[in-house]
Every structure is written in C-alpha cells, then in structure tokens.
Amino acid sequence: MSEHSSRFDDTAWSGFGTAQTAAEFCTHWLALQCLQIGEVRSGLLLLAREGEGPFARAAQWPSAGGNVEPLGLAAERCLAEHRGLILRGLADALVVLAYPVDVDGNLEGAVVLDVAEREDDALHSALRQIHWGIGWLTTLLLRRRTADQSLVAQRAREAIDVLALAGEQTGLRALAMAVVNDLASRFLCNRVAFGVERKGRARLLALSHSAFFEKKSHFVVALENAMDEALNQRGMVCVPPLDEEQQAVAIAHRDFAASRTICSVVVERAGVGIGVITLERERPFDAEDLRAFQVVAALIGPLLETRIRLDQWLAGRVRDRIQDAWRHLRDPRRPGFRFALVVVAVAFSLIFVDTDYHVPAKAVVEGAVQRAVVAPFDGFLRDAPVRAGFLVRQGQVLATLDERDLLVERRRWLAEREQHGARYRDGLAKHERAGANVALAQMQQAEAQLALTEEKLARAQIVAPFDGLVVAGDLSQLLGSPVEQGRQLFEVAPLDAYRVILKVEDRDIRDVRAGQSGKLILAGLPGELLDFEVRNISLAEADEGKNVFRVEAQLARSDLKLRPGMEGVGKINAGEQTFAWIWTHRLTDWLRLQAWKWLP
Image (tube, rainbow, N blue to C red; front, top):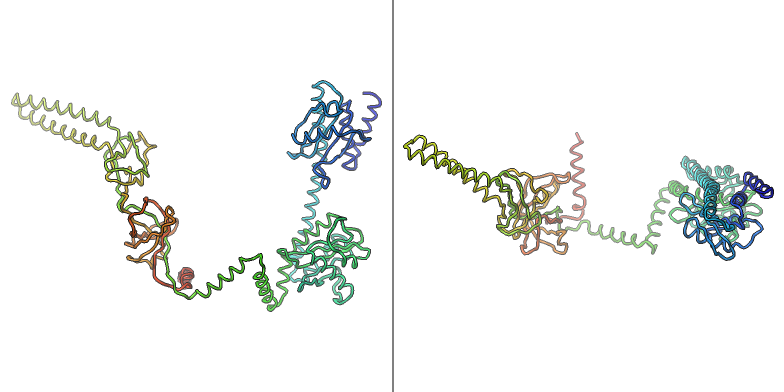
C-alpha cells in the first residue's frame, strides 16, 4: 500500500472511530470499504430514511460527486432481487458490485461500488469484504431502532405515570389539578391548563400551581377561546407549528400565545371531544413532546368521562342519559338503535298477550323396528361386504364367517359316524348286543354333532332379515378377527316405518303429555315442517350432562325420504301462555329451587 493510500486509510479509520452522527459514520464507513477493496472509482450507500422516500443516499465516495447513474441502476436491481450482484456493461462503469443491507430479514438499503476490472475470484472476495463490512452498518441501524423503541417506551411510561396519578384522584377537579401539575413539572412548562366540554364550549377546570382563578378574567376568556379552537377542530393545535404545512386554524392560539410556545391537545372519548389540555413554555415543543401529549390525552379520556359523569347531580345524570338516547336516536349512522327501540316498544306491548307455548327439544329419527343381527357361533370373520348406511334386500348377505374349521369338523364327524356304523353292523353280525348298542349310541352322537355342524355351515352366511337400511355396524376393518357367539354385528331398520325420539329436559317434561301435537324440522330437510303426535313418555337418561326424557312421537306423514339417525329440532305444543311467562318461567323456577335449597 502506498504512503498516500495509507494516509487516507488512517484518516478514514480516525473519522470512523470518532464519528458523532449517522451521516459521518456512513461516510467514513464507505470510504474504508472503497480503500480496503482498492481500485474503486466511485461508491454509493443507500439507506431507508423516514420522510425521504423508501431509500435515500446516505453516503457517496468520493465526496466530490460524479456520475452515479450506473450505481443507481445497479442499486435498483440489487434491491429488487435482494442479493449480491456483479454487473458489467452499465453505462460507462467498468464493473459494478452491489450488495443489499439486510437487518433481521428486513431490507434496509444497498451498497454499490464501481470497481476496476479484475479476476472473478477477486470480485467475489470484494463482495465478501462488503458483506463483513455491512456488520458495522447493521450495528448502526439496530442502535437507531433501539433508540426509537426507547423513546416509545419512555412516552408510554410517562403517559402511564400520568394516568396512574389521575386514577388516584376521586373527584373531577382533583384529577384535573393532579394532571396539570404533573405535566407542568414533567415537561418543564410555565403553565398547563385543563378544560372540559360544557354545552359545546370549553370551560377551564384547573390551572397548574394555581388553587384559584377568576373565571371572568380576560386571561381565562382568552385561554378558553384557544381551547374552543382546538375542541371545534378535534385535533392538536400548536403555535408556532412544528410542521410548516399544518392545516389547523390557530387564530385564538396566536392571540393568547404572544411570544410563548403553546400547544392544545383534545381529550376524546368515542370520537367526541370531552376536554382540552393546553401547555405553555418558553422553548418550542418538539415532535416527541407532541406525541407524548397525544398518548396522555388518549389514555385519560375514558377516566375523564367517568369522573365527569360522577361529578354530576342525579338530575344531571338523568338529563345526560336522555340526551345520549335522543342523540343516538337521531344519529343516521346508528339505525340499529332505532330498530332496537321499536323492538322494545313492541315487546312491552305484547308482553301480556297470550300465545302458543312450545316445548323445544332435540329430535332424532329412528326406525320403528330395529333388528339386531348377531353372530350365530364362535368363529372368524371372512367377509363383510356391507356396512352402516347400506340399503339391503331381504336375504342379502351381510357378512360371512370362515367355514374351513366347520368343514374339517364335518369330515371328522362323517368319519366317526361311518366308523361307529361299521362297529354297529359288526356287533349285530356277531350277536354282540352290548357292543352293538354302544356303537349305535356313538353313531347317533356323531350324527347329532354332524347335524349341528351342518346347521352352523348353513348359518355361516349372515343375511338381512328384511328390506331396510343398515344403521349400525362396520366390519370392513375387522376381517380375519374372531367373533363371539351372540355378538351384535349389524343393526337393520326398515325403510317404511319411522318414529321420532324427542329429548325433553326434565324442567320442561311437566308440560308434555301423550296426545299432544307438535312440529319438527330436520337438518336434512330444512324446508319441510313435519307434524307429529306424542305417543309415549319414556324414562330419563343423561345427554350431554343434562337429564332428559325420551319422548316417542309418530310422524303424520310416511311418504318422506327419511333415514334413521337424522337429527333436528322439535317443538311440542303445550297450550297457551303469556309472553311474560314464557320468557321468565325458567328463571322463576330456578329461583324457587335455589330458595328452597338454601332457605332454612
């Protein structure tokens, strides 16, 4: 390295180590990168900056300027592809190296260098140098982000402290006085005023470090006019304005401020201004101060509304409720309020009118007859061509048990029968009656066992007892598994006879009797309103943690396309009652039960 380059390198390192601002840091960092890579014609560093577009120029090397158009084109492509690039043939640039600045997966900028032509290995080495150097930029960006988060956390802490102090006060005036004194000391203000909305005007409620003030004085009138100005615009008003493009009207604020800095922030609740905080001091407010004022106003809004309502007399509270209701009734944005009012009026007018009382209950369709199909003997399942949901015809095979053991057993009993028959005939030929009788008995025993085996073979195929629907049973996953004699394999229900089972809660069963009519809607037939008649009330059972009674009902129609297991909701007509009784009888019954339980 030459003495001239070494001197520039030392200068860059010295400036990099003593940089006081982000701009100085970026400038010296880019210079160091260019000097370490070597033979760099120009360099450009783009970083995301708030208020200057998505990406802005943070540093350029050499600082004297030059044609950066090729670097800008390379930067756009690097930012679009989000990866390091080696580009040739861009305008008058020789070779352009571009590398993105990535912080925690977020694209924060790009570094672009116009370097002299060199070997590909050297170019890749230069990209690696940029990659490692970006670590310093990452530290700068993370430090900046941490500083921003610290400011946000500080504003939040200050606002919460003010809210905690206000929440300790029981009265409206005590709350206002505590808030203005705390804000005055916290933000070094000469004076802080707190006003509340009264009949569309702001009225001064508390003044920092002042126990009393003359309500009709020129000072108070001017201050309330400034508060009105902010309250009418429902926004912050600051004089002098922090932003030259501020659109807020500040005539009253300028008249009141004189040579001081004044800021008014509106305290809102549900989009309605209910108070104003006005702060004064000699030096101007900055953006962080204004954000802190807005956070404080947003947090104390609900608390202020509560204290204002509690500060009113009974007549004032009633008046406010009536005014709120009237305002909501006239508000075109709240048609639901008018609708609710009409509903309430209709409900009160009909509360003592008699109407049909219906007992609601969950309903399920069952077959009038449900035949269980069981295993005729112990064996192994060989085949099961049907399962729940299949329509079957009478005599159709539902399942088949393995017959191999039975065939072997039949051959064994056939052989024993022939053997005992031969002994029986031999005994008759030799006139050995005792031996012949024994052989005859054994032969008859073998014939009985053979008949039993034949019967099992005949029943190895399990068939449907009638035309119907298989409502239970799925053996398709149990082929080859053993089954015990008497085990239920299927459940079949006919397709032309159904009944409805209503599950009525025990608190409503007193109103249900046999012979009552009702209506039913099934989930599978939502457009059909089915009539039924109660036939029988069965015993109680548990259903989803509730005690319910099974009420059997008969449908009035039999030409419906129903399936066992269909569910719906049924309502049993239990006579006439008033709307008031229908809506309150369950609560009344529960209160009576609790009173009987707890009273001595």
